[in-house]
Length: 489
Image (cartoon, rainbow, N blue to C red; front, side):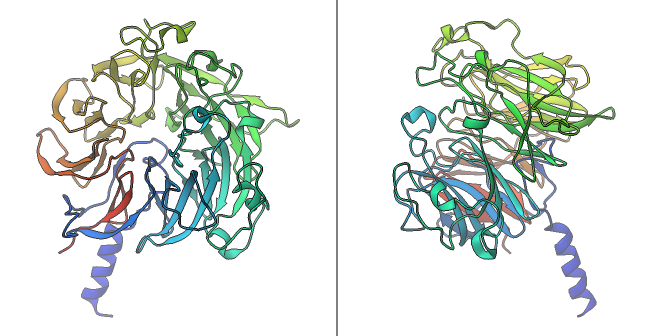
């Protein structure tokens, strides 16, 4: 091989070598990538800068995860890939990174009896987390599952009841086939933890050592005014190898959950103290000591709290469901993840977008002691995770506004209005900010203190999932399609 050719290969490898095995940067949850030479935009008609595109179902809310040459993305079953799976289902698709063809899929029937337990057509909303040969996921049925990244291609490992699991209640068990997922173990949080599912599970599982940290998704019932499981945990710890339920929070969050639990945990070492951060459905952020070892006797452990931070201290704290549908006064809720960057903790939240007051904020907190450093007012509501890069915070809200805020002072640098509400968070890479709205407006802005629009497209499908960057490719998920975008000469 010639030296120029070898140098080119080494250069390319250095540029395009980063998988994205979980949602956000390594456990701090910051949505920033070091990938370079990414496209400013694309043309869906001429396919300029389009590597490939695949059809999903009709709703895809989960951010795609890329690891080991595979892409994991959630959708519904409106576009069946296997004729034996008919009807409304939650689906996790495993696709080949090279061309997007289907390798296998986890197909999960809906929870029965009450549509508010598992909202129709929502599909699989949770992000996968990948480590080595294993995929960890919270399903639409409130289960934590461990899957083999190879599917059934290397045999059926561990759990042997995949056929029954993929079959709706009261139907004869199906037979697993080559397109079906291989479940290694399964923990049903409804039975093991006593949770009450609401609308759809959205949980990005965090791995720390031998443990999984999982937000349980417990919430209100179909009246939106009653907590059926007041003793249910909001954050649990599961043994990674076996699925054993090891520990839970002891903060009695459930009675004051205003809607549901949708914020996933983060992790950082703070002055030599490993710390787990978690935002509850009661609008309060907690710092916990991570679990060291399971109890010798096998009893369920309680996580030790270091501190808690209330982003909305004047809000109602008791009998919170009196304020359902009150747009002037209500508790707060936090949908996005807590993010650690530059020695600070950033959290966005406020009145629940469906049921609460018209206020929301971006907060900056000292992660050592929960002291609020500054507060910045966002639009009526926010459902997203803040992104921090080069001393700036990029936060989006349900009014369709992107806010660029100085991370040190909390002062506005600029704002930009887009068409539609944000459910997707901002992704920053290669000096660019990638953004998408629920009206299908996808834009690329220049990162930095000077606002500059590089691309603005009105697509034909809403966007709920955060744009993902991996191995030199931009992955854009609309409700119906997954686009792989690369800078083409």
